Length: 362
Ligand code: GLA
Image 1 (cartoon, rainbow, N blue to C red):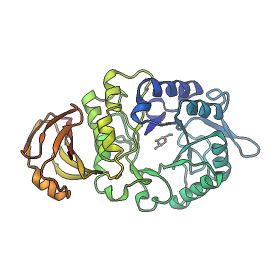
Image 2 (tube, rainbow, N blue to C red):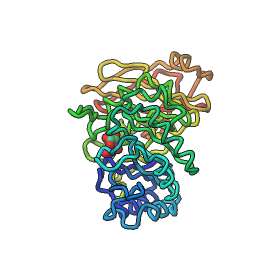
Image 3 (spheres, helix red, strand yellow):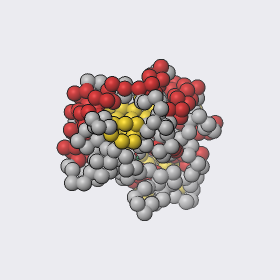
Image 4 (spheres, rainbow, N blue to C red):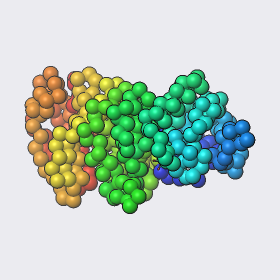
């Protein structure tokens, strides 16, 4: 869990922004809710010096990266950075190809805790070899870092990256919209959600599918639509990287991002990704197995008309091996108990809305 600069700020990043975001992480309650990493994405680099050392953009980071990382650490948070396995980053700045060990040593010396490693300008490079090379360079640098693979799912990293990185992007870039498709490949979150079904077998502690960073609070959708997006990222056991301006978020945005009951589903120690068990027109039902013999169930209406359905629990209890006869149903957005599994649940969901419940074993 953390925050990344890209979705809201693009390359408009600076030491000042990172310091203010670190302050806001603490003051807004994000840190208390579990958000730990502050990651600067593309745009901090500028060139290489005569010895090949990466040089940062001095206008944006006049004191270098280390004091920025130190400040983030002083708040009890962790600091992350971005580079690219190819010659250049996606913004055309210097990538790490040919400088992997040198860059990894620099990051370690600055106190970096997380590296997002992109895939632009990779030419004919092999993805597994390129990411393994940087993994080994990070090991050699000697500082523990989360290694985030960002090759957009193009070479199916879930098949090879379990021992290479801690998380891997599964798709092209998320956009701040419901189900749009951009010409260059950006996707609305509902389109991304579709591509996660079937990948659940590859996710688990220390090796996660990454459906990309959150767009919650960036302005392109309604609060209810953002609630759907956030709920489903929790169900998917996805990395929760906020991508909005947390210095000035609305009450509604904060309530979504810091919903501890939804977050506890995301962070459940079994580390299981939800499975889609029903899909019919826009209606989808997803189930996530949780520790303690519990499950979370999301009833998501992605369609344009309301849906009404009756959920009979015995079938679901059997399917997911839940042994008790009766569970309490907890609505994770209303924060109240709404019944038990003894009687069928009548579910009514408006278009672009969601019901997320936890079957509590008590
Ligand atoms: C790619 C990545 C994005 C972001 C940009 C930065 O598109 O997928 O997440 O890092 O590059 O240029």
